[in-house]
Image (tube, rainbow, N blue to C red; front, side):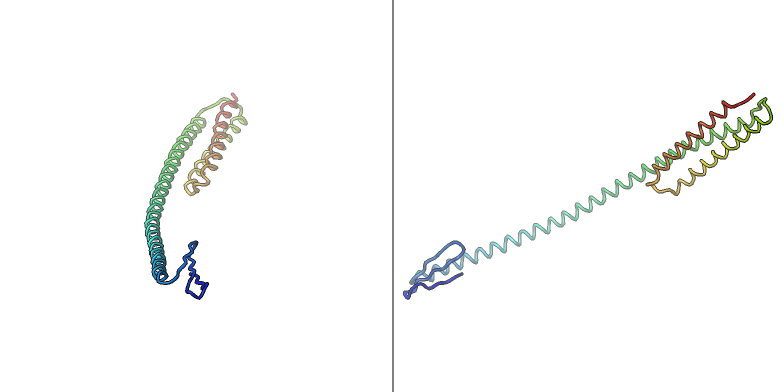
Length: 182
């Protein structure tokens, strides 16, 4: 509040915000009381607004904490679901590969038991190739066993490389049948 005395007859100007009050005589005390009451009411209203805002903010914080907890729970459920799907995919892939490896073993046993009429050096080369196929088949099985210790991040790369190697092994089995010399 800014008070300025203008004349000797006690006329005063009171400036409050954008309002100008001219006071003089007996009315000046009544007007001062009104101005003071307005300021007190404004102060009380300001305090109430701040108090209400802080109460609302507390509820908002509580809601935020509850929402954050729910988001964490949802994320954990998603993570658990992804882990279950990964384990299921891994199990299915291992079973599929094990079936292929067992089929390769049976085919190797059939080739070893098969008698062919050929020169001795052709039979020796064929037996060497069969031994090489058996070795590669066993290596593939060992690699699959090692996969148990591989992280989920490396799974896709391993799967791609392993599939390529299994395709090459399958092609080698097909090729040995073509090269039978009688």
